[in-house]
Image 1 (cartoon, rainbow, N blue to C red):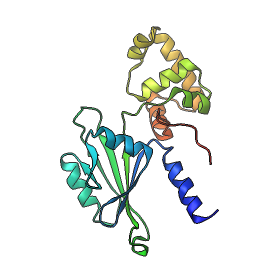
Image 2: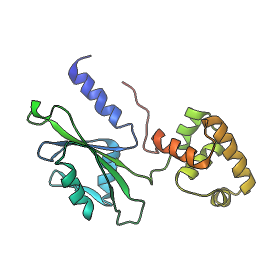
Image 3: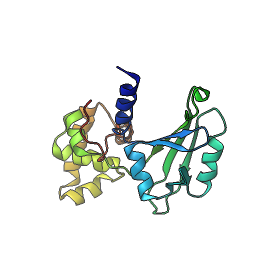
Image 4: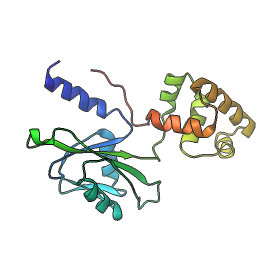
Amino acid sequence: MAQQEVLFVSLRALDRIAVGVVLLGVGGEVLHLNAFARRIVAVADGIAVSGGRIAMSGAAGQGLRTACVPEEETVFRVLRPSGAPDYVVTVLPAQEVALRPRACARVVLITDPAAHLQPAGLRRIWGLTTAEARVAAALSAGRMPAEIAVRHGVSEATVRTQMRAIFDKTGTRRQGELIRMLAHAGITAALHPFSC
């Protein structure tokens, strides 16, 4: 595969993940935003692009400037004016910065804890029923079993039965373990079919 084709496929693959990915140049300029990052900056709820650079609210703006200096991973939170859960931002140094003038110097990863999982993806990956997938998505959004029962018009016992089936199908044993596994799965409502 030619280098241009590899780059094209790589950028398309970045558009499939449920984490904002921002590639920054040596001078801190934005070189690329994946689809998830473009949605985050479009909402401008604590993170935006201004003058070709990433702008973050409050102390996070200073955190980003500081993170762009050292050659090590930096992690910090970005408060959101809307009151939604804070973004978690990880800044990673990129390799081989000096090889090209517009080289990528930093990779900024933006995690949105408020992103909702797509039940269709959960059904496809773990073989969950529609009801189980709805429960799993609600749990990942921070809802409690009693609240899920009320929202779906079923008993809490039904929700707990569905949770046991979800645990069995996903290989998890506890609600916290399931939520962590789902968060790492990165399947959000933003995902769409991908083909090379």
